[in-house]
Image 1 (spheres, rainbow, N blue to C red):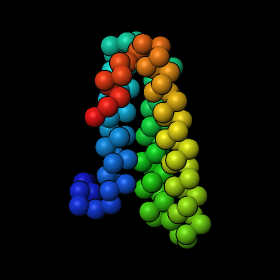
Image 2: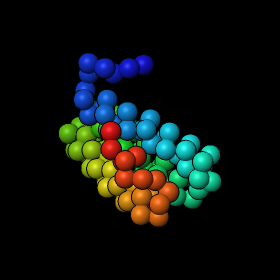
Image 3: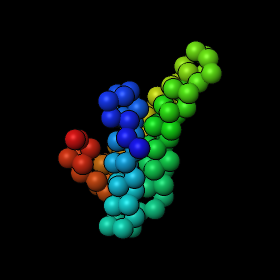
Image 4: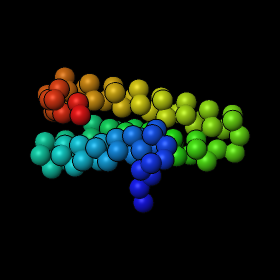
Length: 97
């Protein structure tokens, strides 16, 4: 179920969720890190879920509210990524495409 050719925000947030899921697996399997990895999985995949909900919003207010939540989750995810980098669980290169 690809949305290729559709909404760019939906596509990018979905792709980001996949990358976060792979990071979660890496942290658990390779680094044996379970607490921070759960946090990054939750916030990182929530971004795309809230974008999807926003697109299906029943009103402009509902749409903006869900996008606002996605933005807050993105900021939280950035926080966890910085923690993982600075605690040396991941390298800076892992944070770029």
